[in-house]
Length: 129
Image 1 (cartoon, rainbow, N blue to C red):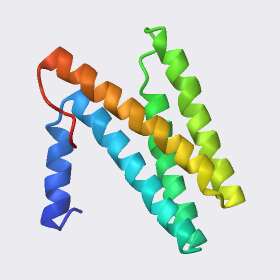
Image 2 (image 1 turned 45 degrees about the horizontal axis):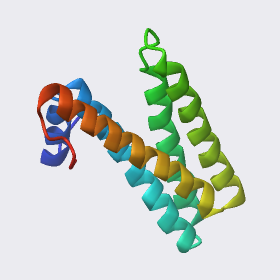
Image 3 (image 1 turned 60 degrees about the horizontal axis):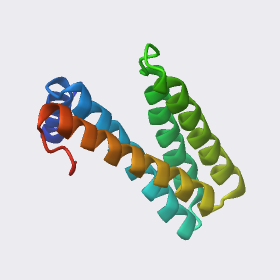
C-alpha cells in the first residue's frame, strides 16, 4: 500500500511516462545506485556497496529483459548489459571502485544516447532527468 505522497507521485509518473522516459528513468536509477555504492566504498560500508550494486544489477537485468530482439542492435546491447553486470559483480567481490566506475561510464553514455534519440524522434528534451 502506497502511503507517502512522494511514492504516489512516483507511481503516477511511471504510469504516465512514455517508453523513452521510462528507459531514462531506469538509467537514472542504475546510475544513482552505482554512485551510492561508490560512496559506500569510500566509507568502507560494504553492506551499502553490496545493496546498491545489487539494485543497479536488478535494473540492468530489467533492461536486458525488455530489449526488443527484432532489432539487430539488441544483441549488442544485451552483451553490453551483461558486461556491465559482470563489472558490478567484480566490483562487489573485490571491493574495487574501478569496475563500478567503468560500468557507470557505459550507463551514462547509453543514457545520453537514448535521451538524444528520444529528442530527435519526439521533439522532447529528455536530457535532464
